[in-house]
Image (cartoon, rainbow, N blue to C red; front, side, top):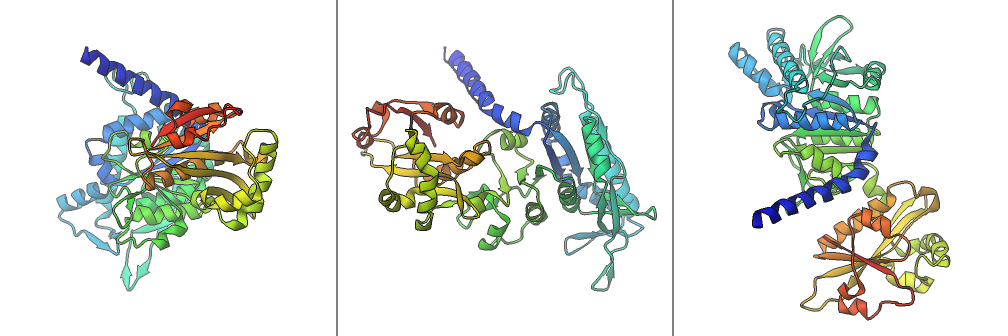
Length: 442
């Protein structure tokens, strides 16, 4: 009996996850993602699962460009050849004597990825799939040159990306696979930094996401807590020491038009799926838009809030709040503001609870400017306040609504009742409005 209940619980959990992933599946379709896979990830036992997840993303209509490195593989080839392995300021010094090792490592790594993406065995998650993987001379390189008197010889940097060719290949439903090497106009081969290739490619083709799969997977604050989201500007507010190259690359990409940059642990099974198809994700996301737009309100925002809220209050969607009340409660509000206009807002009100009651807050006044209701601003501001609630030890959120029940259900709220509200909030319930009650466990 217990075994059957466990199986049933697992099935319901899977069903719940699948339903809530649907908005992300729809949002990601036909979007262009760059995924950088470093050499350590390719050697890890989890790599075959990563390939299966990449195949799944492709099957869901996501346009994929894979950028791969081969640092440990190159090190191994150089060691076998009894050659000197030099790094200066984090950059490999590639001499003409070591270039064959680089070429061998890159070639074998690329072929391994292509082979895994070609699997069609009956016992494989990719059974029945057909994936065309295309590589080529898509990156033009130039010499890194002489620095501090040292000639880096065949160590190079990106000169240009063949955007037209990559776009055409993606339009034809191919996965594009790019190695971290480049070719010069004179026919030379240069070894490139994988993070640079991924970043330059994402910027040039205007990718919707850039994803780094590597061992240095997350940012943590001074207390050791995971920083899930951060803007490039916020890097300066933290004392980050010895940042992995991918973080500097992520910052550059976000500052140059890549909307979302994700840094994920390749060691964790399903990291790609969890990051892309759940709201919280598991890694660190760098974006130049989110935290600059969402902030706590100040007294200067009262006029803008009134302009946003009044039409909804007149329609009876929201409860009327006077200017005086807004000024008194302004510290409860979060807003998204652009060029002096409040585009969205929401408020988080603490609820007084007894010792035997779960710590709770009420979400209220969720509103978006009519011209921006097809954007994800309401989702952004909800996420911002949920994070704020968690930081203050709040265990569940309640919301009372008369018109937007379906939207809150889509955001993970569940149908509740007046009787489940903390007693202090029950006493204030307006039976004349007859609002529906929803709750969400944090």
